[in-house]
Image (cartoon, rainbow, N blue to C red; front, side, top):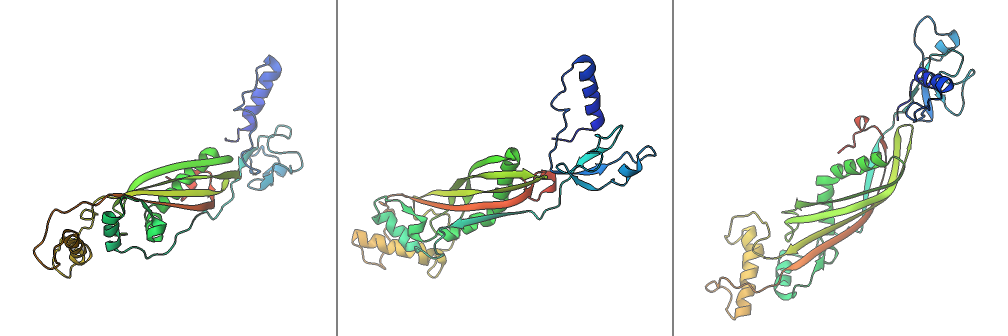
Length: 288
């Protein structure tokens, strides 16, 4: 809401007295901030006591002598909403990240053949920290902007925001390629003097599937012994398949043996968000 010129309000009030015309809500005196800047017309008609107030900040709860702008007799002064400067911040804190290390590449492949399709969680396989760190690094600032936008829409009271998208996590963890990460934010916001203070809870989830140990998004086209692809995927898998079919390792290759079961990989995290931002998006560094 904008602070309406007192002259406009006076004319509407006079019309009400003469003709009974109701004063529109948009014309009534609005106070979007607790303080205001006194502004004069800057001409020779401004009384000296009001000229001295030009540019000064006053509180709506503590009027100066003679009242607020426009309240004294024939006063043409106006009140400009006062928005203080603030150091903006939005902090995302994620709990329950676990450790950086976890299952090896062979562990993922073995579970594909021996796990019977039983799903696993990132906490069980030990890669929760890697995934969420990569997500925050890639999308953290965008998420802050989206939460800030939701807070601006609410201004005061409950703030909620839901999100989900597919992200390419190739190279972060062996089993994770294009994966879905989503979640929700729920919190409270308070707006004063054009500044929004907000705080709340952040819940995140991951949904993926390990469906084929030979198609996990590893972009390495080198099958020679000693290469990453050979040592970490093809040799362990080839040796394992030979054992299942009774073939000795090191002999002629047995191709096309795939009788594993795909399994789900899921993860959840909880955390918090707190910060202070400008209500005016044009002044803020946190925008969508």
